[in-house]
Length: 126
Image (cartoon, rainbow, N blue to C red; front, side):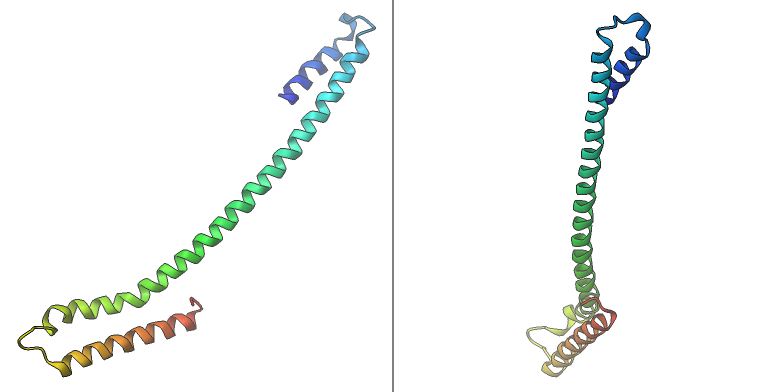
C-alpha cells in the first residue's frame, strides 16, 4: 500500500505545473514519507521471511530425526517379522510344542535384532 501511495504522489509531484506552488512541498514530503514507510515494510517483510525460513528448517530437522528413528525401527523389526511370520504359526502348538526348537527360534530372533542394531550403529543411524 505504501509503495502504491508513493507512486501516486510521485506522479502528482511530477505534474508540478498543475499544482499550486504552496502545495508542492507537501506533496514532496508525502512522497518522502511513503518512501520511508515502503522501506520499513520491505525490511519487516524480509525479517518475517527469515523467521519463517528458520522455523521451517527447524521443523524439517525435527522431522528428519523422527524419520531416522522410524527407519531404524523398521530395519530392526523387519527381519524379526519375517522370522515370526515363518515360525509363528507352526512353533507354538499347545499339545506338541518343542522347547528346543522354540528356544532356537527365539535365540535367532535375538541374534538378528542385535546384529541389526549393531549394523545401524555402524551406519550412524543410532
